[in-house]
Image (cartoon, rainbow, N blue to C red; front, side):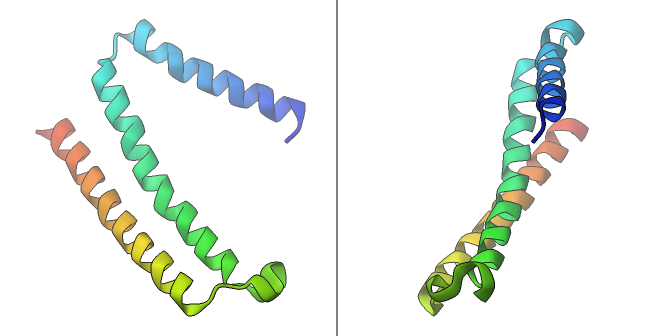
Length: 96
């Protein structure tokens, strides 16, 4: 990343961090939303790892074997379930 992109990233993080004291947002709500965001991002990250670790060109002879594929697939299915549950919990918390 270039210096300008880092500065923009720092600016966005700073503004998000100031939202709680400036707009009097409930801190527990912000913490819950951030954890749900992590629960949504994690399955995407594991899916990319799963995809890349099975490609021949970047991995060469270190490509996943069937046991690793089964373990990663199980982890991915659990994370998708956890993500759907987290989104449902926030929906219930926000909309009653």
